[in-house]
Image (cartoon, rainbow, N blue to C red; front, side, top):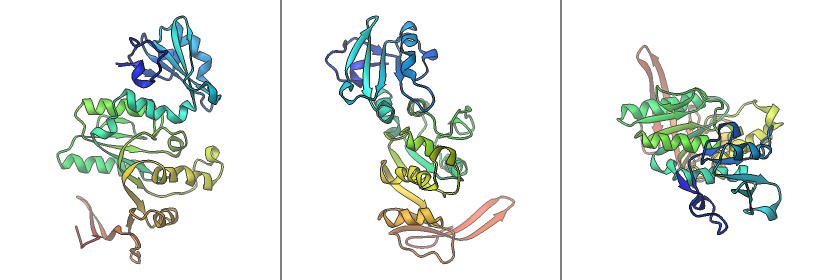
Length: 294
């Protein structure tokens, strides 16, 4: 629960209005919730404001295309409706405030790319568990503590779902989380306010052109993760042509390669020199900056 004025510092709002939850679906609104009415690609939720008010929502924040209406407030049935310009693009930040920035309270890694997101995120979670950490994952398989995931509708959930899940993880004592970051999620700004310790790029191949239209647009969507969003480490597959290209513009990027003729053009790099598959698992010899490792 959080006061509405903590999310929107507006003198016209009643200081005693408290919000229980952020809700995108008017059919799921309960007493005291903040109904978030965004204009989606298929559904304009501003058409369901009356339904949310009838369900006794504590307040409504509604997307508007009119700049001059930004943060203007009207009342219907004594319920405040806050108009927010470009709400969809700013929802991650609003949810971050509501859930008290949960991504900053654990080690948080994002993985993007056409293939390999699930494998990488799952492996990372399994590895840190062997180190005594308590991991959680979010992605194609589902969201939740490792081995206890609940099926999810999308690879990358809504901005609210992500922040809510992370807050729940923190409350359960989770100290590491890996999330699969889709191109849809990047274009729709669902992960914009998250604080990533590491951003990982696996590869890029032909996919999702029904949504992006061209490979160039698809690549630009993925590129946002490394050039526009916050992350301490940017780790990219240098064997992928797109990854190699982006690394040239990322002076502190970490290049990862499995190629024998890999050229160490980055300050930080990691090269697999030998990969062996056994009945007990996979053994990888790799050469990082500074020496060999096993």
